[in-house]
Length: 179
Image 1 (tube, rainbow, N blue to C red):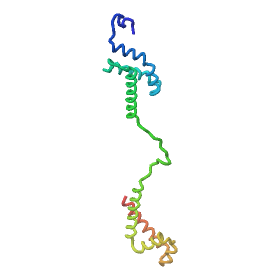
Image 2 (image 1 turned 90 degrees about the horizontal axis):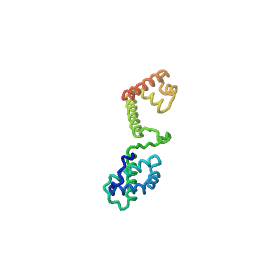
Image 3 (image 1 turned 45 degrees about the horizontal axis):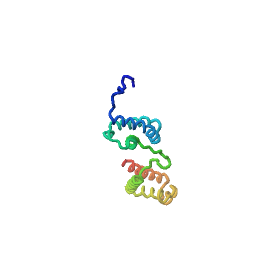
Image 4 (image 1 turned 180 degrees about the vertical axis):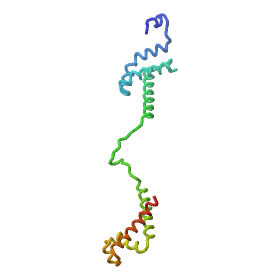
């Protein structure tokens, strides 16, 4: 403040301003320590200034029975406001643990797909000509080799291969055609 800007000594400042100035002198250090503990050393000076700016703008500044308690309450309210602003502006991120948080497909979806595939497979098998269906089931369900099917049915191994290729082709068309 420049010496010209100071009020003349004979002028009196309002009583509330004197009270606030006295409260500032008396409680500045304790407010600074309180705010430094709660908000950190970097933010404490700005918060102390904000406390006194709010106090100066308060209608209650004219009737302070307990100036220290009044200033402390303003400081606590500032911290609460600051905390609320930070919570609403802050996104919370949790670390991803590959072993437990990896994306897994829904089991219900897999069950539905498996049921659909089974239905298509059974329909394709049912639609096969009887001899092709018999060769296919002997090989895939009864687990007989082509030679064993050849001997059981009295057909050549080439004919067993033909019926198997025909059966697999029909199943493939039924399953792939539905997708």
